[in-house]
Length: 401
Ligand code: PMT
Image 1 (cartoon, rainbow, N blue to C red):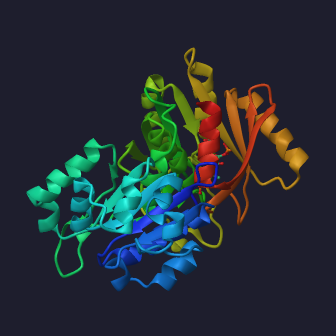
Image 2: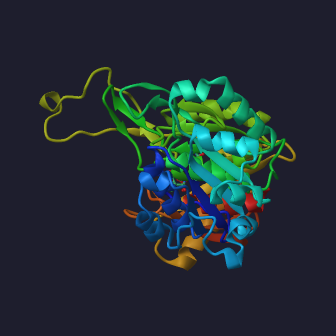
């Protein structure tokens, strides 16, 4: 699972309650730990009937708290909640949700939530009938009205043979939604356009010339901008990752389609970030039917023609106040020469900022992490970041916001 971080180490309480989906809480705990946070699991007795304490202790690297009557000298029943930056309850059963809505303090999770000023994120999981029962609906509305964030539930396969609303949201979604709660809303009211993925240029109905961009870096930027309050449009070229519902997504395949979508959306955007890997060339002609080796023989020559430079066009036509950010993917191993290539590229493209990242067989493209430096229009380094693509996205938005 990708690492997410919000720039500093948080104390996160993960409350686990008694549902079959408790096993997925392990993945949530692991993602928080891998992102560098200090995670304390508070499990109800019912939760520990589904997943054992040792699993949570090994994965969280902390003692699992369960009992109101342990650590009384340290006033654990309130201390855990007081120390938390964030509380995430995963899965939250109908019973737990009812207890929270009523303000019950009969177990350690109840006292922890009541004693805490931290944001609370709740990921419900239950059967559809329980989720849509008026009692649960009213309890969830109460929790929302108190500022708690509800993630999911998803619609899908439930524990038995049935399906419907009530399936726990995917761990990745829970982690992203939880950390988003702590993000500053410093892009509220801003319209942000992000391109992501790699364009494909068709050779014939079944083949294309393309690149290895997965769309991860662009999607991380789009998701972080949405979490900071922006209205986000993502133009995705052949994405290998799924965009969350927090943004408008337009799917494109080729560079010319990307150009049309960008030309359409850019005028209404305050900030445009071109993270897509865009093909510089496309085949001059696209064969109507599959190119056959029987007719081509041992060699096949394909004539390529230049694609428009979308970023350069955007930068040249940007309106006052609009900020245009390009990316530069370079395979140059030497730091000095990489920097020089970045400086040449921003001068040529004319964008306000250029995010330079080294790419190769095993870096930049399709990986979980990235290492970048950001140049301003004068070619000066204004930021350097290394880490998960989510953390790079956040650092970049810290700079731009
Ligand atoms: O998607 P991932 O797997 O997470 O990988 C992320 C990434 C490595 C693809 C990303 O971080 C990145 O570097 N994207 C830019 C890749 C690229 O096309 O770089 P470039 O140096 O060829 O292009 C420079 C800039 O001009 C880019 O902003 C590009 O979007 C833009 N461009 C390029 C060609 C073209 N015809 N039109 C353009 O607008």
